[in-house]
Amino acid sequence: MLSFVPTVQLEKALKTLQADIVLLAQELLTMDQAGKNWLHKSVLISTIGASTRIENAALTDAEIEWVDTTLTQDGKTTAYDSKRAYILNKLSKDRERSIEEVVGCREVLNLAYLQATDFYPLTENTIRGLHKILLSYYPKASSYAGSYKSNPNLVVSVNQETGERHTVLEPTPPGPLTQTSMQDLIAWYNSEVREYPWTILVATEFVFRFLAIHPFQDGNGRIGRVLFLIALMQGDDPALKEVVNFVSIDRQIERNRPLYYSALRNVSGGRYRPNPQDYHLEPLAWFFLKMIRQALDEVSILRQRYSALIRLSEGALLVLACFKSSPEKRLTPAELVKETGLVRRSVQNALVNLVNAGFLQRLGVGPSSRYQLIF
Image (cartoon, rainbow, N blue to C red):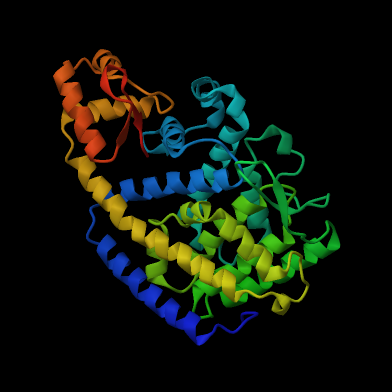
C-alpha cells in the first residue's frame, strides 16, 4: 500500500486527469506514424534538455536536437566517440560537461522509452545499469558510475541567476543504510506498481523515496526523473503508457523548478526518514498532477506545430534546414541566400513564413536583422 491515503479532492483530480489522458490516447491513434515519430522526438529533445538543465547543464533544445540528429543515421544511434570531436568543435569545448550529460541522458531516455515494460520487475541491477549508462560519457565518473555512493551527498538547489545554493534534503549516509533502504524500496515498488489503482501516486512515492535515499554519488536527479517515467509506463494503465511517450513532464518541472525543490523539502522536512509514513507526500502528488496536466496541454501546441511544418514550402524547408544544421548561429538573409542558393525574395518569403509559424525568431530590424532557430 501507499504510505499515505489520498484525500477525496486528490482522487477527484486524478479521475479528471485520467479522463483527459484517455482522450489524448484516443486522439493519438488518429495521427499517422510520421506525425507520432515527430511528436515523440520533440518530447525526447525537450525532456533531455529540461532534465539536464535542471542539473545546470547549458545546452538549448535546438542544440540538443542537432546533437541527436548528428548521432542518428538511418534511424540508428551512432557511437558518440566517433562524433565527439566534431560535436565539441561545433558547440565549443567549454561546454564539454554539458554535452556529456546530454549524450548520457539521451541514451538512458531512449532505453527507457523502448524497454520500460521489460524492466519489470524492477531490480537494483537495472537502476545501477541505467546510472552507469547515464554517466558513461563523463570520464571523471568512471570510478563510481553504476555503484552506490561512498561519500555523503546532498540534494541541493542552485539559483541560476545568483549561483546561491540551498540544501533541499539530507539523504541517507553511504553504506548499509543506503543499501537496505534501496532493497526495501524496490521490493515495495514491485508489489504496488501493478496493483495499486493510481500509478501516478505509486510513481510519486517511489521517486521521492529514491531521491531521499540519493543512492548514487552523482546523477540522482536525472535518474529519478527517468524512473518516474518508467514507473508510469510499468503500471496497469494502457492509456497512460501510451501518452507518456508524447508528453514532456520534465519540461514542466524545469519551468517550475523553485516549486519542485520546495515540494521535495516540504515532504520530508529536509531529511531522509526510515519510515515512509513520516513523509507528507500528498503535496508532491499535487505537484506532479499539475506538471502532467501542463504537459498534456502542450501536446495540442506541438501538433499544431507539426501541421505547420508539413505545410511549409520547399524553400522554407531549405532555409529551416540551414538553421537546424547551425543551431548556435544567428543568420542574416544574405547568409541564407549564400547557403541555400535561393534568390533573396524567396529567402525573405521563407523567413516571414517561418517566423509566423513559430520556427524562427527575428532579432533586430532593418538590414542588420538576424534570425534564430526556436525549438
